[in-house]
Image (cartoon, rainbow, N blue to C red; front, side):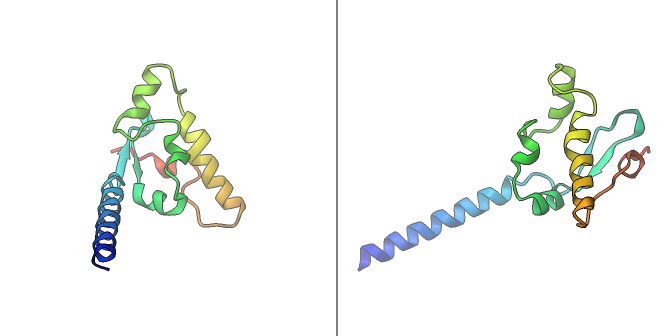
Length: 114
């Protein structure tokens, strides 16, 4: 009986550690992405995580590190506007067609010059 209690405590502690680790790996709540001459793009990262649930929807194409999109563009591994067209705008338009709440659909709604 005592060993079962110890095992349950260990499992509970492991679950808590995993939960905290997942929370810590969510990245910043809000980010500002480089947007070229049109201006930077404020990006509500946690809001996207809540809606999409699967980080790989975006991060299959670029790593979860700051500046990774620009780095891949500079290396010729991503085309200019590839992420915006294949992910951002396409997803927002799909949600609009489905009658769901969506994010911005035009360039000027995302890009903000300072």
